[in-house]
Image 1 (cartoon, rainbow, N blue to C red):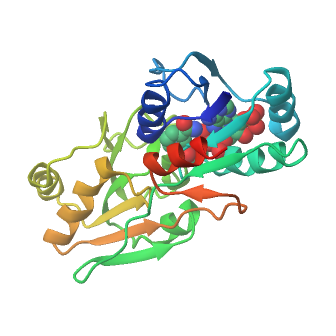
Image 2: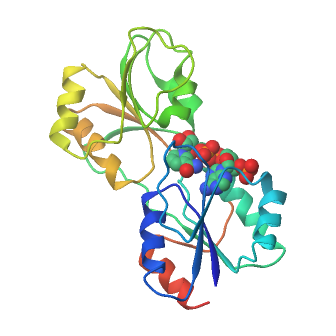
Length: 242
Ligand code: NAP
């Protein structure tokens, strides 16, 4: 089969490695183009938007795709919504690989909010905030000139930020001790993050808990229903059942 994988996540990379261990399938990886030097382990890679539902449906037809796996980021809601509509008419098999969200455990001080604007509004005046919402997501907080921000993202957010804003450009840190140091040394009072559920992002949540800090946790967007599984092995099972 020719399989289209909507990627941009660690799980998409892991999944493609597994699929390509056999000779049964050809994999096309599709990326949004949000990173400068994207890594690809697929047979073919395409980068950039399709042009909405119609563009995606036309691509699926032209490329003679047999099945689609949506392994995109849990907050990439538009592409996940589009693909459900795009496969509906030809009736192509679609599987969403959805990693489980984080859940609060006793001792966590989460303030759950629906979206980025609600998170920005939830922060009290004058707070020192560790913002871990991606460079695109940071934009929703820029109007809060009364706050001090430490922003960690893979690339620097655009727009003009106060000169006091501190940027850490790079991937998440996996050591809880390092995250505790970061929160302490910057006298952080609030952590803001999206509930991506990624292993790589968990250390900061544990660090906030260890320091008894509140976490403004942005819930995942609601997506249209489709067949979904929580991990790579389950996608492989689904594929072999097609
Ligand atoms: P989105 O809102 O779902 O997508 C916006 C548009 O980008 C889509 O309509 C589509 O354009 C294009 N697109 C998205 N993913 C694509 C893919 N895999 N292949 C081809 N085109 C794709 O997603 P987003 O704007 O990229 O990101 C939304 C949030 O998710 C951001 O806050 C971002 O930080 C987070 N996120 C995204 C990614 C990612 O790889 N996309 C990775 C990590 C985090 P057309 O309508 O023209 O097809």
